[in-house]
Amino acid sequence: MVEVKTISEMIAEINPKYKNGPDAEHNLMYDSPSEGLEPVYFFILDLMESFGLNPEKLIDNFSSTPGSGHFGEMGQRSAIMQQQGSKLLGDINTVLRSVLNLIYDLRDFRIRLESYEGLNSNDSATRDAARLSLKQIWLDKVDMQKGNSSVKAMALTQAGFVTLLDAFLAAKDEKDVEKLDLNERVKRILKPRIQEFNSWISQSERELKKRYEIEKTYLRSQLKSLQIYSRWAKPYLKAAMELEQKDQSRAPDFIKVFDTMILELTLLGKNKLDSKALALEGEFPRDFAKEKFLRKFKRDYYSCILVQFRFRGIPQKIQQGGHFSFGGRAEISFKAYALNDDELAKLDKELNDSDIGDVLSLVEGATDESIAQLKEDIDYYLNEEPEEEKENKKPKDQSNPFLALFGVYDKQEKPKEKIQNKEKNLENIEKDNWYEKEFFRKTASTKAVETAFSLFDLYKKAHGMSSFT
Image (cartoon, rainbow, N blue to C red; front, side, top):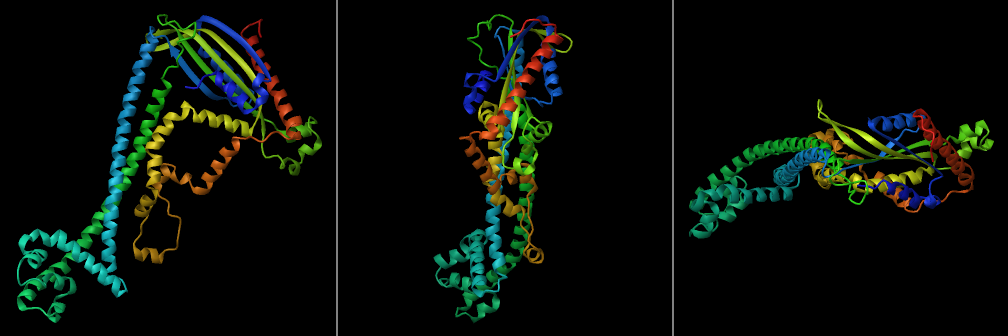
Protein backbone atom coordinates (compact mmCIF):
# COMPACT_ATOMS: atom_id res chain seq x y z
CA MET A 1 0.00 0.00 0.00
CA VAL A 2 1.02 3.61 -0.56
CA GLU A 3 2.33 5.48 2.46
CA VAL A 4 0.42 8.65 3.43
CA LYS A 5 3.59 10.73 3.50
CA THR A 6 4.47 9.77 -0.04
CA ILE A 7 1.58 11.87 -1.42
CA SER A 8 3.41 15.01 -0.32
CA GLU A 9 6.66 13.54 -1.58
CA MET A 10 5.09 12.75 -4.95
CA ILE A 11 3.91 16.34 -5.30
CA ALA A 12 7.39 17.59 -4.36
CA GLU A 13 8.95 15.35 -7.04
CA ILE A 14 6.44 16.52 -9.64
CA ASN A 15 6.94 20.21 -8.80
CA PRO A 16 10.31 21.06 -7.13
CA LYS A 17 8.70 24.22 -5.75
CA TYR A 18 7.17 22.06 -3.00
CA LYS A 19 10.37 20.34 -1.85
CA ASN A 20 10.41 22.63 1.17
CA GLY A 21 6.74 22.03 1.91
CA PRO A 22 3.32 23.18 0.69
CA ASP A 23 2.21 26.76 0.24
CA ALA A 24 0.51 26.55 3.63
CA GLU A 25 -0.06 23.87 6.27
CA HIS A 26 -2.35 23.79 9.30
CA ASN A 27 -2.51 20.96 11.82
CA LEU A 28 -4.96 20.14 14.56
CA MET A 29 -5.57 17.29 16.98
CA TYR A 30 -8.91 16.10 18.32
CA ASP A 31 -8.90 13.56 21.15
CA SER A 32 -12.14 12.04 22.37
CA PRO A 33 -12.05 8.34 23.37
CA SER A 34 -15.77 8.35 24.06
CA GLU A 35 -16.81 9.78 20.67
CA GLY A 36 -16.58 8.05 17.30
CA LEU A 37 -14.02 8.96 14.69
CA GLU A 38 -16.51 8.91 11.83
CA PRO A 39 -18.06 12.32 12.64
CA VAL A 40 -14.62 13.95 12.41
CA TYR A 41 -14.02 12.57 8.95
CA PHE A 42 -17.49 13.22 7.56
CA PHE A 43 -17.63 16.74 8.96
CA ILE A 44 -14.47 17.68 7.03
CA LEU A 45 -15.62 15.76 3.94
CA ASP A 46 -18.92 17.66 3.87
CA LEU A 47 -17.10 20.91 4.56
CA MET A 48 -14.82 20.36 1.54
CA GLU A 49 -17.83 19.61 -0.66
CA SER A 50 -19.53 22.82 0.50
CA PHE A 51 -16.41 24.71 -0.70
CA GLY A 52 -16.83 23.10 -4.13
CA LEU A 53 -13.59 21.09 -3.82
CA ASN A 54 -15.13 17.76 -4.98
CA PRO A 55 -12.82 15.71 -2.72
CA GLU A 56 -11.30 12.44 -3.91
CA LYS A 57 -9.98 9.75 -1.58
CA LEU A 58 -6.37 8.86 -2.35
CA ILE A 59 -5.32 6.81 0.67
CA ASP A 60 -7.30 4.50 2.96
CA ASN A 61 -5.01 2.38 5.18
CA PHE A 62 -5.64 0.72 8.50
CA SER A 63 -3.70 -1.44 10.93
CA SER A 64 -4.83 -3.33 14.01
CA THR A 65 -2.54 -4.68 16.68
CA PRO A 66 -2.24 -8.50 16.44
CA GLY A 67 -3.62 -8.91 19.96
CA SER A 68 -6.85 -7.02 19.27
CA GLY A 69 -10.25 -8.48 18.45
CA HIS A 70 -10.49 -6.17 15.45
CA PHE A 71 -7.41 -7.85 13.93
CA GLY A 72 -9.01 -11.31 14.12
CA GLU A 73 -12.30 -10.05 12.71
CA MET A 74 -10.65 -8.35 9.74
CA GLY A 75 -8.41 -11.37 9.16
CA GLN A 76 -11.43 -13.66 8.82
CA ARG A 77 -13.16 -11.32 6.40
CA SER A 78 -9.99 -10.97 4.34
CA ALA A 79 -9.59 -14.77 4.13
CA ILE A 80 -13.18 -15.14 2.87
CA MET A 81 -12.61 -12.51 0.17
CA GLN A 82 -9.35 -14.16 -0.88
CA GLN A 83 -10.96 -17.60 -1.16
CA GLN A 84 -13.86 -16.33 -3.24
CA GLY A 85 -11.57 -14.28 -5.48
CA SER A 86 -9.21 -17.22 -5.96
CA LYS A 87 -12.09 -19.52 -6.88
CA LEU A 88 -13.44 -17.06 -9.45
CA LEU A 89 -9.97 -16.58 -10.94
CA GLY A 90 -9.81 -20.35 -11.39
CA ASP A 91 -13.17 -20.23 -13.19
CA ILE A 92 -11.86 -17.42 -15.40
CA ASN A 93 -8.82 -19.51 -16.37
CA THR A 94 -11.06 -22.48 -17.20
CA VAL A 95 -13.28 -20.39 -19.46
CA LEU A 96 -10.24 -18.81 -21.12
CA ARG A 97 -8.90 -22.27 -21.98
CA SER A 98 -12.31 -23.16 -23.38
CA VAL A 99 -12.32 -20.01 -25.54
CA LEU A 100 -8.86 -20.85 -26.84
CA ASN A 101 -9.89 -24.42 -27.73
CA LEU A 102 -13.04 -23.16 -29.46
CA ILE A 103 -11.00 -20.79 -31.62
CA TYR A 104 -8.70 -23.63 -32.65
CA ASP A 105 -11.72 -25.80 -33.52
CA LEU A 106 -13.34 -22.99 -35.51
CA ARG A 107 -10.10 -22.46 -37.38
CA ASP A 108 -10.04 -26.16 -38.40
CA PHE A 109 -13.70 -26.01 -39.43
CA ARG A 110 -13.05 -22.87 -41.47
CA ILE A 111 -10.22 -24.58 -43.37
CA ARG A 112 -12.45 -27.55 -44.11
CA LEU A 113 -15.31 -25.32 -45.26
CA GLU A 114 -12.99 -23.49 -47.64
CA SER A 115 -12.48 -26.79 -49.47
CA TYR A 116 -16.24 -27.21 -49.85
CA GLU A 117 -16.57 -23.62 -51.04
CA GLY A 118 -13.82 -24.29 -53.57
CA LEU A 119 -16.03 -26.87 -55.29
CA ASN A 120 -18.32 -24.02 -56.39
CA SER A 121 -15.49 -21.83 -57.68
CA ASN A 122 -15.48 -20.54 -61.26
CA ASP A 123 -11.84 -21.52 -61.55
CA SER A 124 -11.36 -25.12 -62.69
CA ALA A 125 -7.95 -25.39 -60.98
CA THR A 126 -9.52 -24.31 -57.66
CA ARG A 127 -12.35 -26.83 -58.07
CA ASP A 128 -9.90 -29.66 -58.81
CA ALA A 129 -7.70 -28.78 -55.85
CA ALA A 130 -10.71 -28.61 -53.51
CA ARG A 131 -11.98 -32.01 -54.72
CA LEU A 132 -8.57 -33.62 -54.24
CA SER A 133 -8.32 -32.13 -50.73
CA LEU A 134 -11.72 -33.57 -49.78
CA LYS A 135 -10.82 -36.94 -51.28
CA GLN A 136 -7.73 -37.07 -49.09
CA ILE A 137 -9.89 -36.34 -46.03
CA TRP A 138 -12.41 -38.99 -47.07
CA LEU A 139 -9.67 -41.58 -47.59
CA ASP A 140 -8.07 -40.85 -44.20
CA LYS A 141 -11.18 -40.28 -42.06
CA VAL A 142 -13.98 -42.34 -43.64
CA ASP A 143 -12.73 -45.01 -46.01
CA MET A 144 -9.82 -45.98 -43.76
CA GLN A 145 -12.34 -47.40 -41.27
CA LYS A 146 -12.99 -50.28 -43.69
CA GLY A 147 -9.60 -51.72 -42.90
CA ASN A 148 -8.13 -54.03 -45.54
CA SER A 149 -10.95 -53.25 -47.96
CA SER A 150 -10.22 -49.50 -48.00
CA VAL A 151 -8.93 -47.92 -51.20
CA LYS A 152 -5.46 -47.22 -49.82
CA ALA A 153 -5.06 -50.66 -48.27
CA MET A 154 -6.14 -52.43 -51.46
CA ALA A 155 -3.93 -50.26 -53.69
CA LEU A 156 -0.84 -50.64 -51.53
CA THR A 157 -1.10 -54.25 -50.36
CA GLN A 158 -3.20 -56.26 -52.81
CA ALA A 159 -2.01 -57.29 -56.27
CA GLY A 160 -4.17 -56.15 -59.16
CA PHE A 161 -5.36 -52.97 -57.45
CA VAL A 162 -2.24 -50.84 -57.89
CA THR A 163 -4.13 -48.36 -60.08
CA LEU A 164 -7.11 -48.08 -57.72
CA LEU A 165 -5.83 -45.11 -55.69
CA ASP A 166 -4.76 -43.04 -58.71
CA ALA A 167 -8.04 -43.81 -60.46
CA PHE A 168 -10.06 -42.76 -57.42
CA LEU A 169 -8.24 -39.42 -57.27
CA ALA A 170 -8.70 -38.83 -61.01
CA ALA A 171 -12.39 -39.74 -61.39
CA LYS A 172 -15.11 -37.18 -60.60
CA ASP A 173 -18.15 -39.44 -61.01
CA GLU A 174 -19.21 -42.87 -62.29
CA LYS A 175 -19.07 -41.72 -65.92
CA ASP A 176 -15.41 -40.73 -65.54
CA VAL A 177 -14.67 -44.26 -64.32
CA GLU A 178 -15.85 -45.68 -67.64
CA LYS A 179 -13.51 -43.39 -69.55
CA LEU A 180 -10.44 -44.55 -67.62
CA ASP A 181 -8.22 -47.33 -68.94
CA LEU A 182 -8.87 -49.80 -66.12
CA ASN A 183 -9.69 -53.47 -65.91
CA GLU A 184 -13.26 -54.40 -65.03
CA ARG A 185 -12.42 -55.60 -61.54
CA VAL A 186 -10.95 -52.21 -60.57
CA LYS A 187 -13.93 -50.40 -62.10
CA ARG A 188 -16.40 -52.51 -60.09
CA ILE A 189 -14.55 -51.52 -56.89
CA LEU A 190 -14.12 -47.88 -57.90
CA LYS A 191 -17.69 -46.98 -58.94
CA PRO A 192 -19.37 -47.50 -55.54
CA ARG A 193 -16.47 -45.68 -53.83
CA ILE A 194 -16.89 -42.63 -56.06
CA GLN A 195 -20.64 -42.67 -55.45
CA GLU A 196 -20.09 -42.96 -51.71
CA PHE A 197 -17.61 -40.09 -51.78
CA ASN A 198 -19.97 -37.77 -53.66
CA SER A 199 -22.77 -38.57 -51.22
CA TRP A 200 -20.42 -37.91 -48.31
CA ILE A 201 -19.54 -34.43 -49.68
CA SER A 202 -23.11 -33.11 -49.48
CA GLN A 203 -23.87 -34.66 -46.08
CA SER A 204 -20.56 -33.76 -44.44
CA GLU A 205 -20.76 -30.15 -45.65
CA ARG A 206 -24.22 -29.75 -44.13
CA GLU A 207 -23.12 -31.30 -40.82
CA LEU A 208 -19.90 -29.31 -40.73
CA LYS A 209 -21.73 -26.00 -41.24
CA LYS A 210 -24.16 -26.93 -38.49
CA ARG A 211 -21.30 -27.77 -36.11
CA TYR A 212 -19.51 -24.56 -37.12
CA GLU A 213 -22.52 -22.42 -36.16
CA ILE A 214 -22.97 -24.31 -32.90
CA GLU A 215 -19.32 -23.69 -31.99
CA LYS A 216 -19.68 -19.96 -32.75
CA THR A 217 -22.78 -19.80 -30.53
CA TYR A 218 -20.87 -21.57 -27.77
CA LEU A 219 -17.99 -19.11 -28.18
CA ARG A 220 -20.42 -16.21 -27.63
CA SER A 221 -21.71 -17.95 -24.52
CA GLN A 222 -18.21 -18.48 -23.15
CA LEU A 223 -17.29 -14.85 -23.73
CA LYS A 224 -20.40 -13.78 -21.85
CA SER A 225 -19.45 -16.13 -18.99
CA LEU A 226 -15.96 -14.66 -18.97
CA GLN A 227 -17.38 -11.17 -18.64
CA ILE A 228 -19.66 -12.24 -15.78
CA TYR A 229 -16.87 -14.05 -13.89
CA SER A 230 -14.60 -11.05 -14.33
CA ARG A 231 -17.25 -8.70 -12.93
CA TRP A 232 -17.81 -11.05 -9.99
CA ALA A 233 -14.10 -11.48 -9.21
CA LYS A 234 -13.14 -7.80 -9.12
CA PRO A 235 -15.12 -6.84 -5.96
CA TYR A 236 -13.74 -9.83 -4.01
CA LEU A 237 -10.13 -9.22 -5.03
CA LYS A 238 -10.46 -5.49 -4.43
CA ALA A 239 -12.04 -6.09 -1.01
CA ALA A 240 -9.27 -8.56 -0.11
CA MET A 241 -6.66 -5.94 -1.01
CA GLU A 242 -8.46 -3.21 0.93
CA LEU A 243 -8.63 -5.46 4.00
CA GLU A 244 -4.85 -5.91 3.94
CA GLN A 245 -3.27 -4.15 6.88
CA LYS A 246 -0.42 -1.68 6.60
CA ASP A 247 2.81 -2.47 8.43
CA GLN A 248 3.02 -0.28 11.54
CA SER A 249 5.47 -2.47 13.47
CA ARG A 250 7.88 0.42 14.18
CA ALA A 251 5.23 2.96 15.20
CA PRO A 252 5.68 3.71 18.95
CA ASP A 253 1.92 3.73 19.58
CA PHE A 254 1.40 0.36 17.87
CA ILE A 255 1.85 -2.19 20.67
CA LYS A 256 1.12 -5.80 19.70
CA VAL A 257 -0.85 -6.81 22.78
CA PHE A 258 -2.80 -3.54 23.08
CA ASP A 259 -6.30 -3.25 21.65
CA THR A 260 -5.44 -0.48 19.21
CA MET A 261 -6.18 0.46 15.63
CA ILE A 262 -4.44 3.07 13.45
CA LEU A 263 -6.30 4.48 10.45
CA GLU A 264 -4.78 6.72 7.77
CA LEU A 265 -6.83 8.62 5.20
CA THR A 266 -5.96 11.22 2.57
CA LEU A 267 -8.38 13.43 0.65
CA LEU A 268 -7.53 15.67 -2.29
CA GLY A 269 -9.89 18.49 -3.25
CA LYS A 270 -9.39 20.98 -6.04
CA ASN A 271 -10.99 24.11 -7.46
CA LYS A 272 -10.37 25.07 -11.08
CA LEU A 273 -9.12 28.61 -11.61
CA ASP A 274 -11.63 30.56 -13.72
CA SER A 275 -9.37 33.03 -15.55
CA LYS A 276 -12.16 34.70 -17.47
CA ALA A 277 -14.23 35.38 -14.34
CA LEU A 278 -11.18 36.71 -12.50
CA ALA A 279 -10.45 39.05 -15.40
CA LEU A 280 -14.01 40.38 -15.36
CA GLU A 281 -13.72 40.90 -11.59
CA GLY A 282 -10.51 42.90 -12.09
CA GLU A 283 -8.06 40.45 -10.50
CA PHE A 284 -6.54 39.61 -13.90
CA PRO A 285 -5.82 41.97 -16.85
CA ARG A 286 -8.78 42.47 -19.20
CA ASP A 287 -7.09 40.44 -21.96
CA PHE A 288 -7.64 37.31 -19.87
CA ALA A 289 -11.37 37.61 -20.52
CA LYS A 290 -10.86 37.17 -24.28
CA GLU A 291 -11.33 33.65 -25.66
CA LYS A 292 -8.66 34.22 -28.30
CA PHE A 293 -6.12 35.04 -25.60
CA LEU A 294 -7.13 32.12 -23.35
CA ARG A 295 -6.81 29.59 -26.20
CA LYS A 296 -3.05 30.14 -26.07
CA PHE A 297 -2.94 28.29 -22.76
CA LYS A 298 -3.43 24.51 -23.06
CA ARG A 299 -3.66 23.62 -19.38
CA ASP A 300 -5.77 24.71 -16.44
CA TYR A 301 -4.62 25.51 -12.91
CA TYR A 302 -6.23 24.37 -9.67
CA SER A 303 -6.22 25.38 -6.04
CA CYS A 304 -5.62 22.02 -4.33
CA ILE A 305 -6.21 21.06 -0.70
CA LEU A 306 -4.63 17.89 0.64
CA VAL A 307 -6.24 16.74 3.89
CA GLN A 308 -4.46 13.95 5.78
CA PHE A 309 -5.96 12.07 8.71
CA ARG A 310 -4.26 9.80 11.23
CA PHE A 311 -6.66 8.18 13.65
CA ARG A 312 -5.54 6.21 16.67
CA GLY A 313 -8.38 4.54 18.47
CA ILE A 314 -9.65 1.61 20.49
CA PRO A 315 -12.14 -0.52 18.52
CA GLN A 316 -15.34 -1.16 20.49
CA LYS A 317 -17.50 -3.98 19.15
CA ILE A 318 -21.22 -3.30 18.99
CA GLN A 319 -22.93 -6.50 20.07
CA GLN A 320 -26.20 -5.94 18.22
CA GLY A 321 -24.77 -5.61 14.72
CA GLY A 322 -21.36 -7.22 15.10
CA HIS A 323 -19.68 -4.00 13.96
CA PHE A 324 -17.02 -1.80 15.55
CA SER A 325 -17.12 1.81 16.69
CA PHE A 326 -13.95 3.85 16.96
CA GLY A 327 -13.12 6.55 19.45
CA GLY A 328 -9.71 8.06 20.03
CA ARG A 329 -7.29 10.65 18.77
CA ALA A 330 -7.45 12.27 15.33
CA GLU A 331 -4.50 14.19 13.87
CA ILE A 332 -5.50 16.24 10.82
CA SER A 333 -3.39 18.34 8.49
CA PHE A 334 -4.59 20.78 5.81
CA LYS A 335 -2.04 21.47 3.05
CA ALA A 336 -2.39 23.99 0.21
CA TYR A 337 -0.95 23.48 -3.29
CA ALA A 338 -1.31 25.06 -6.72
CA LEU A 339 -1.12 22.43 -9.47
CA ASN A 340 -1.91 22.32 -13.17
CA ASP A 341 -3.47 19.63 -15.37
CA ASP A 342 -0.16 17.96 -16.20
CA GLU A 343 0.95 17.78 -12.59
CA LEU A 344 -2.36 16.31 -11.43
CA ALA A 345 -2.29 13.79 -14.29
CA LYS A 346 1.21 12.69 -13.31
CA LEU A 347 0.17 12.35 -9.66
CA ASP A 348 -2.79 10.22 -10.71
CA LYS A 349 -0.55 8.07 -12.91
CA GLU A 350 1.94 7.45 -10.10
CA LEU A 351 -0.87 6.43 -7.77
CA ASN A 352 -2.26 4.02 -10.38
CA ASP A 353 1.20 2.55 -10.95
CA SER A 354 1.46 1.77 -7.25
CA ASP A 355 -0.14 -1.12 -5.38
CA ILE A 356 -3.52 0.62 -5.50
CA GLY A 357 -4.07 -0.53 -9.08
CA ASP A 358 -2.60 -4.03 -8.70
CA VAL A 359 -5.88 -5.84 -8.09
CA LEU A 360 -7.62 -4.35 -11.11
CA SER A 361 -4.64 -5.04 -13.36
CA LEU A 362 -4.66 -8.64 -12.13
CA VAL A 363 -8.21 -9.28 -13.33
CA GLU A 364 -7.79 -7.17 -16.46
CA GLY A 365 -4.66 -9.13 -17.33
CA ALA A 366 -6.58 -12.39 -16.96
CA THR A 367 -9.49 -11.24 -19.13
CA ASP A 368 -9.12 -8.05 -21.15
CA GLU A 369 -5.51 -8.58 -22.25
CA SER A 370 -6.05 -12.27 -23.00
CA ILE A 371 -9.14 -11.50 -25.06
CA ALA A 372 -7.32 -8.68 -26.83
CA GLN A 373 -4.69 -11.16 -28.00
CA LEU A 374 -7.46 -13.23 -29.61
CA LYS A 375 -9.43 -10.20 -30.80
CA GLU A 376 -8.71 -10.69 -34.50
CA ASP A 377 -9.82 -14.33 -34.48
CA ILE A 378 -12.91 -13.65 -32.36
CA ASP A 379 -13.95 -10.78 -34.62
CA TYR A 380 -13.51 -12.95 -37.69
CA TYR A 381 -15.67 -15.82 -36.46
CA LEU A 382 -18.40 -13.94 -34.60
CA ASN A 383 -18.87 -11.25 -37.26
CA GLU A 384 -18.69 -13.61 -40.23
CA GLU A 385 -21.52 -13.43 -42.79
CA PRO A 386 -22.51 -15.77 -45.61
CA GLU A 387 -21.03 -14.89 -48.98
CA GLU A 388 -24.38 -13.93 -50.52
CA GLU A 389 -25.10 -11.52 -47.66
CA LYS A 390 -21.65 -9.96 -47.98
CA GLU A 391 -22.32 -9.20 -51.64
CA ASN A 392 -25.72 -7.64 -50.98
CA LYS A 393 -24.76 -5.59 -47.95
CA LYS A 394 -22.67 -2.44 -47.93
CA PRO A 395 -19.62 -2.37 -45.70
CA LYS A 396 -20.47 -1.38 -42.17
CA ASP A 397 -18.87 -1.20 -38.76
CA GLN A 398 -19.02 -4.70 -37.35
CA SER A 399 -18.74 -4.43 -33.58
CA ASN A 400 -18.58 -7.48 -31.40
CA PRO A 401 -20.84 -6.71 -28.41
CA PHE A 402 -19.03 -9.14 -26.15
CA LEU A 403 -15.64 -7.58 -26.77
CA ALA A 404 -17.21 -4.17 -26.26
CA LEU A 405 -18.20 -5.26 -22.74
CA PHE A 406 -14.52 -5.90 -22.01
CA GLY A 407 -13.54 -2.51 -23.34
CA VAL A 408 -11.38 -4.02 -26.11
CA TYR A 409 -12.68 -1.49 -28.64
CA ASP A 410 -11.74 1.32 -26.27
CA LYS A 411 -8.11 0.37 -26.87
CA GLN A 412 -7.87 1.23 -30.56
CA GLU A 413 -4.56 2.14 -32.16
CA LYS A 414 -4.88 5.92 -32.50
CA PRO A 415 -6.31 6.64 -29.03
CA LYS A 416 -3.70 4.32 -27.57
CA GLU A 417 -0.93 6.27 -29.28
CA LYS A 418 -2.38 9.49 -27.85
CA ILE A 419 -2.42 8.03 -24.35
CA GLN A 420 1.15 6.79 -24.68
CA ASN A 421 2.31 10.17 -25.96
CA LYS A 422 0.50 11.92 -23.10
CA GLU A 423 2.19 9.68 -20.53
CA LYS A 424 5.52 10.21 -22.22
CA ASN A 425 5.10 13.99 -22.01
CA LEU A 426 4.29 13.73 -18.31
CA GLU A 427 7.84 12.53 -17.63
CA ASN A 428 9.08 16.04 -18.43
CA ILE A 429 6.34 18.49 -17.61
CA GLU A 430 6.71 21.79 -19.39
CA LYS A 431 7.66 24.64 -17.07
CA ASP A 432 5.33 27.57 -16.46
CA ASN A 433 5.59 30.44 -18.87
CA TRP A 434 5.54 34.01 -17.59
CA TYR A 435 1.74 34.34 -17.63
CA GLU A 436 1.23 31.00 -15.89
CA LYS A 437 3.83 31.74 -13.25
CA GLU A 438 2.84 35.34 -12.48
CA PHE A 439 -0.94 35.00 -12.73
CA PHE A 440 -2.29 31.45 -12.77
CA ARG A 441 0.10 29.78 -10.34
CA LYS A 442 0.24 32.67 -7.89
CA THR A 443 -3.52 33.17 -7.82
CA ALA A 444 -4.21 29.45 -7.48
CA SER A 445 -1.70 29.31 -4.63
CA THR A 446 -3.27 32.29 -2.86
CA LYS A 447 -6.76 30.83 -3.11
CA ALA A 448 -5.49 27.41 -1.93
CA VAL A 449 -3.90 29.05 1.13
CA GLU A 450 -7.13 30.88 1.93
CA THR A 451 -9.26 27.75 1.49
CA ALA A 452 -6.96 25.58 3.61
CA PHE A 453 -7.12 28.08 6.47
CA SER A 454 -10.90 28.45 6.14
CA LEU A 455 -11.38 24.67 6.39
CA PHE A 456 -9.05 24.48 9.38
CA ASP A 457 -10.58 27.49 11.11
CA LEU A 458 -14.21 26.43 10.56
CA TYR A 459 -13.56 22.97 11.95
CA LYS A 460 -11.66 24.42 14.94
CA LYS A 461 -14.43 26.87 15.75
CA ALA A 462 -17.17 24.28 15.29
CA HIS A 463 -15.52 22.08 17.90
CA GLY A 464 -14.59 24.86 20.31
CA MET A 465 -10.84 24.54 19.85
CA SER A 466 -8.76 27.55 20.87
CA SER A 467 -5.21 26.31 20.19
CA PHE A 468 -3.98 25.57 16.73
CA THR A 469 -0.84 25.43 14.59
